[in-house]
Length: 256
Image 1 (tube, rainbow, N blue to C red):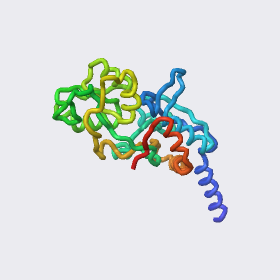
Image 2 (cartoon, rainbow, N blue to C red):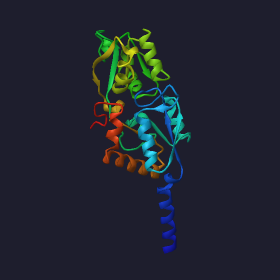
Image 3 (cartoon, helix red, strand yellow):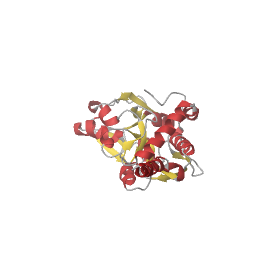
Image 4 (cartoon, rainbow, N blue to C red):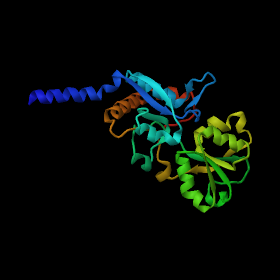
């Protein structure tokens, strides 16, 4: 009996430490600066990328990044094309029915962007008959289709965020709904964002927008989740999180 228990303990310990002996493959949609995007060299860069590399470092694992369209992230994770989704994915009730999540990485608001002084507001009444762009598979698409589309707002999904912003600049959209930090740092502060601004206040809805982003994981990968959560906790505790944060933001993105 003792031998059986001892053998079981060894197996359980090996499972809990399995990450240290292999690589971790993270799925990423590289169209969401400053969280994840491609440098001119083709290298993946951004806050999520830095966090992922630091997590792998602390788990003595090699990081491998697998690019994937955002709206196909969860099916690809389930199909084992990668081990985790590290692409600014918000933790919502709907997604948690299909996958589990790591502990929180950050919590950023959702806002609408439109032409400066357009007078538009992020309400169905203000947007009736207007075209609003969203990235496919995002919480913003879910929110817009849940609350705005039934009331006459034309919600236009795109493959990635770069396409959303390109059509806004080209005048094919009246507004976009997206992560506020991505909108600010990845668009409004850049030359192509000239003449555009946030329209109205933060859009808030716990059911569709969740309460922060984490790493999406398969429900059965309990040991991997435990290891990643420990790594995230240590990154926050020793100040590394703040150092990485300062590379991209002049404010706290971790949130409440």
